[in-house]
Each structure stands twice: as C-alpha cells, then as structure tokens.
Length: 124
Image 1 (cartoon, rainbow, N blue to C red):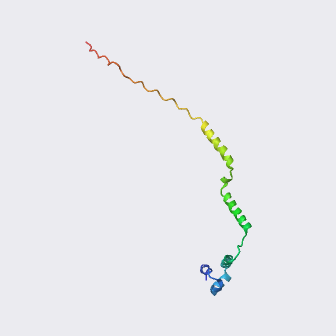
Image 2: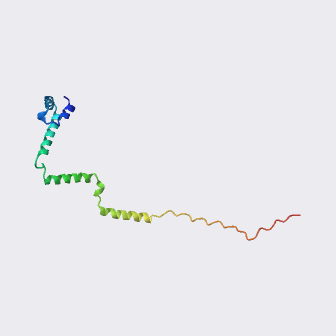
Image 3: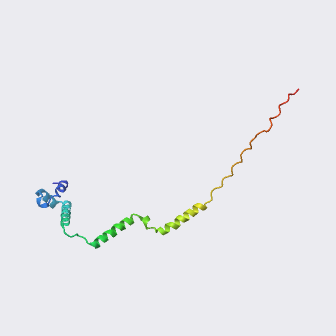
C-alpha cells in the first residue's frame, strides 16, 4: 500500500482498517503522524469542554492582531502627523510660482477706410 491509498483510508476508524493499512502506518512515519492527528481531532470534537479557555482566546486574538498590524506598516503612522503634512503640502503647492507667460499680443488694427481711394490718373 502506498501513502495515497493509506490517506484515503485514514478517514475510517482505525479498528475497522485493514491489515495493510496497519502495516503501512507502522512502516511510514508521515502517515502515522497524520493518523494520530486525525485521532486527536476526533477526540477534541467529541469533548464536552473546549480544549482552550478565555485566556487562550485573548492570546490568540492578540497574536492575530499583531500579524495584521505587521502587514500594514502605514497604520502605525499617527494620524495627527498626517494632518500637518497635508497642510504643508497644500501650502507649498499654493505658494509655488508659476512661470510668467508673456502678455498676449495686441490685436492688429482694423483697416476700415472711410473714403474710397482716389482714382488713378492717366498720364499723357
């Protein structure tokens, strides 16, 4: 029997297991550890009292929250520091000099003759 076949049979109670599975568990430490873990899990599920208390829950919560905070370093920056930084950035942007643009060229004078030009004279 190989490990894959043994793992398929580990869900059954060990007293109902075949002799081949028992032999494999005796020879394979990895499958034996997995079988032991399953036995412990079944015993834990059948237990009337939880295997951990209130202090264990608090310790678990602290550990989980510490890992969450470690994954988000930006959360450690105090929010009071962010407000003055934002104000300084806005002030710097508002005081920044813009390059001066040359004034626009005046419009070209409109040519509107009030009188028609004099007729050209013939030369004799």
